[in-house]
Length: 430
Image 1 (cartoon, helix red, strand yellow):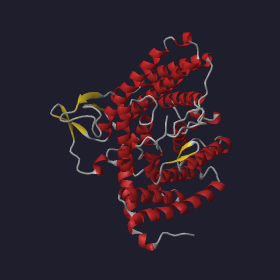
Image 2 (image 1 turned 30 degrees about the vertical axis):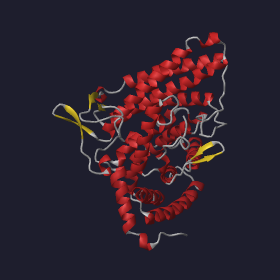
Image 3 (image 1 turned 180 degrees about the horizontal axis):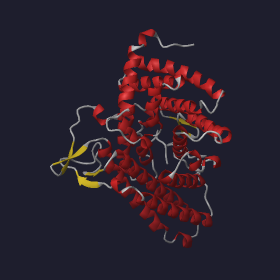
Image 4 (image 1 turned 30 degrees about the horizontal axis):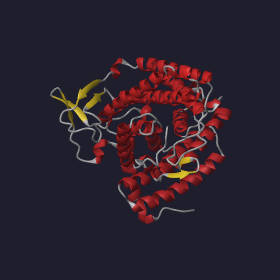
């Protein structure tokens, strides 16, 4: 069995683990756990030492991130060796899956998928962009199905179960997959209240997108070019369903707490825009990171609905002109909506990165002396919104270029190679 060379431990391991835990899992500003997904549960797992397998996975991830952010070759070597040990341990545990170890297995798979994202290099397969983390997503799906089939009756859904499913839904969006029937109902996996209301919207949207897009053919840029062309009647039904989703999404947002209301400011002395972190001088000041995470979720979902509507409207070219009456207006409406929502997403970034503050009745830029001032844990809040908007069909080129540069920044800050995509031939397409 491979072991980490003694010359690399314990000092390097201790430094890397401390760096990862303090900067990536325990931010000073304490962002909402629900916004960070499984990362929010990870710190508690480390503190309680519930599982040696999870501890090993955390170590490999900590060394991986440290190696990328600090350009430390020995840490990269140590992370690879530790990852191989974790992989063997996970294979043994998964082959003996039980109600007692299912959370540990899912947490370990989550960390292994993040490890793959750290060292990811963009490359093309015959069917488009491939990610090393995808097999781990598939493995988590199998384990989640095992919980549904064998343990659901005796074991209530844990936080790990709930967040694993959320992550798999996001994976389904990025990989153009349908949501399997057994995964449709969020309440089975612990979703309640407002979270369940949003979950229903997102699942319905994913399946509409899958109905439209087969994902069987791609051109040289990785853009899926093979589509299911629905009948005129089906097209109308899907457009009606998207309109319903719009309404449901607005109802969901209307139920936000009044304490989540935000104010919009013109940032003083921001200089010429677009620039890094500021698309325009406008910036939204929110009451908390919990609130801004919820608003970002609303905005990107609204953009996904509009982008999907554009895809559908584009299919109308195959139908009689009488059917297409009014659809040009729908197309323009969707384009303008995407631009407006994109500006709002961008206006939230300065707050997410703690770049602005109120001073003498004005919104001013904080002075930041180092990359750490951005708090990588809060940069996690931007990884998902940016992954969507920087690759979304219908977003104008100027906004897309800016979003991709911000995604590159977040990828560098977090140490995730999978997010460091700026050229048009290596990115996913949504």
